[in-house]
Length: 311
Image (cartoon, rainbow, N blue to C red; front, side, top):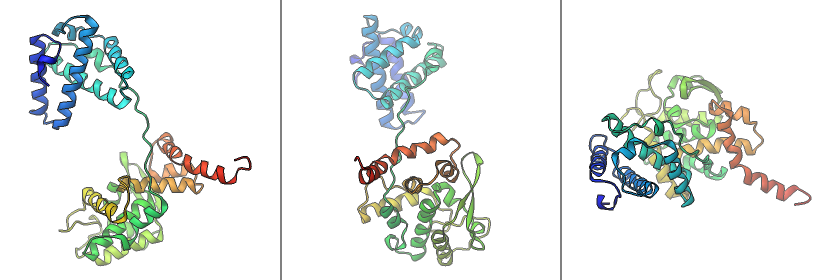
């Protein structure tokens, strides 16, 4: 939007335009991100103009107090903005002030110390047991090459059957499956190691893939390979899942990571202990795992409605 609509003096407007050009040019931010920052700072300057009852000047920005920004965020909240939007608003204001600060034109310390509004925890979106089994089944794979179809089955089996992250699954080596083990040693986030049970169905899927794979698989190299024999990339598995969504009539919630969510949710629904599920997932904090209890509320209500004598 043209600067003429922004209630600020010419000097501040020119600086703001230079900052926006820097975002798009030197920092190469996505066009939509730059547009969002432009809109967020424009709305902030409009609020500040009303707050001080005149067009905003550079010295007004330099003398900004955290209370001024909090007043703006409270105003936006009253207008219906949610926590995620408010967090982005604050990020845009911070970015502009930091840019000015680097040029000795403003002090961003107060705004930099402000905490972003607390984001609501978004609940994982698990698949149903039937959907998860269909995705991990060899019959549903769409790849024409038998070894690639077997590879996809094996990866999906590890995500759902063992609760692995994609990076953990594709980082495994053939040695991890030597001798038909009953468990896997997984190195996850923060280089933390955990032991997860290896279901017979998942082991069988991996062994079938290894038998069909046309490339030499050294003990220390990656077990899962791309079409040309290089290390399998997460984006390939994500594309395979996207294709399967259409073929199986699944919703957009059916992503590779949703299989890991489904692993935890289905264990919880079957009576699994939350602490054990935490260890299987490799979560550092139990509070992270507790998010899954919110997912299963529907299941608990369903059981209550069917079994409670007063329901």
